[in-house]
Amino acid sequence: MDAHYTRVVDGRVVPVPGEWVIDGLHSSVAFSARHLLTAMRGRFREVSGTVTIDEDPGLSRAEVRIAAASIDTAHPKADEHLRGPLFLDVERYPVLTFSGSGARPAGAELWNVAGDLTVRDVTLPLVLSTRFLGAVRHPHLPVAKMSFEARASLRRDAFSVAGYMDTHAPGVPEVVLVGREVEIRLDVEADLRLPE
Image (tube, helix red, strand yellow):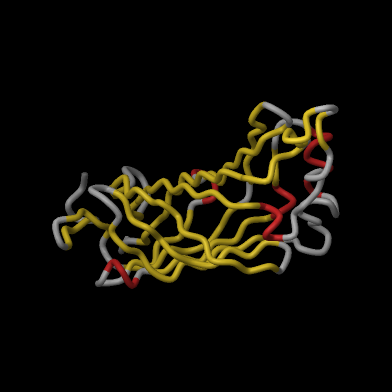
């Protein structure tokens, strides 16, 4: 860990203050949901935004934009359904956003990052369980790189994404075609521009 780009606040290692720009090529927004009995996994290929680290880490903020049409499950027919009106309806709602408004310690290495998630023009609070992985200088570029991972779960019908929730396996009413609960995992790398 490079001490130039991290600091210790209340016994916790955190990034130095500044506006860190999300590196979309080295970041991932992944998800999983049940398809009948198994987990169907996918990701969004286009993510952008900023993480603004405050002198007081608890006052840090995040603004994240995800291109809805960039959803990718490696299953073209499923992606077509997920982009359509029963799910994300990307023609009408092309962007998903998360606006983080604060962070609180949650155990030895975790932070709870609270914010608002907007999907299909429905905005609801969401807490990301987040682990800071460190910050170092890039060996070839005038940037510092920080990384963190975060997880959350949500009910997709709360965001009006309700496709196939009433389609059940024959004779097994508790098994639906596409599950209600969605697990989210973010792996994020972000850049802090340094003097050349």
